[in-house]
Amino acid sequence: MGKTSRDWTQIYAIYGVDDWQTPLFLLIHAIGFSVLSVLFLLYFEPTCYFLQHFLPGPASARFAAGFTGSVTALSAVCLFFAATNFLYSAVSLHWEMSQRIVSSVPDWSSVKQALDLGCGRGILLNTVALQLKKSGSSGRVVGLNPTRTQAENRALNPTRTLRTAGLEGVQEYVTCRSGDPRTLPFGDSYFDVVVSAAFLHTVGKEFGPKSAAAAAERMRVLGEVVRVLKPGGVAVVWDIVHVPEYVQRLNELKMEEIRVSESATAFMVSSHIVSFRKPRQHFVGSAEVRLDWRFNNLC
Image (cartoon, rainbow, N blue to C red; front, top):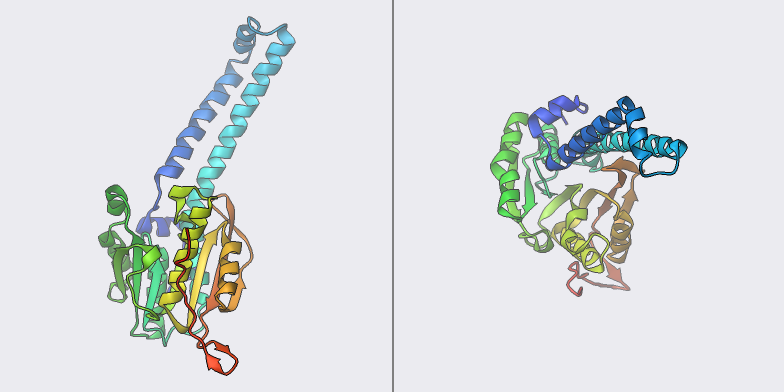
């Protein structure tokens, strides 16, 4: 698999961060709150004197000034932690989880076609390609990013993703394209392996992450993953928050070898890796029944 551990600066130098605006926003506000807390400390007495004009007595003024300064300092600490956790999750943890996802697939030498759903800048995509290269496979991995706004498509330009593959020395193993994850542009039973990292929870977010419509969209994508997976094929998904929904749906679809990893904190919430195998065949009595992997009966 190439290097199984890297310094975060090496990973960042190649891949950067998909949603860099979020940690920047958190960092700017953390610095602002830090400055305010220092000012409260340096000018505590003048602040107390000023507050005495609005509060009954010096004791209440000192309490208000001290409480406000403490809350400001605590907010700065929380914002710094949030920015650090986001960067860690998007870079180091993403890399670590990509190694674990690849390790969840028992045999890469026989893989001819793999799909990375929501490949972003290519951390998991290239990890899969490195494993194909290491195993001597002639297979290829397709990275699919959802069709989004023009600005988002520029940020996740396939050329940039292919550039990272070139830096990793696996460009000949990688193909990138855009498409709708709810109606994947591939035929039934096309891929030996499907992987995804911190993407599925973003589907349907325009409806609100806790809405029934968003849940329906996520389940539709999961149904598409099952549809394009070959019988006997393996899928591995790392995602946050909604993993119990995925497990329930996979059980309903009669998937085999469903496994859920221990929890890991990512982007300030709980995350898990879910892996499963699509059954080679499904029997009811003595007759084979073809299951409908699609999830079209949703509002």
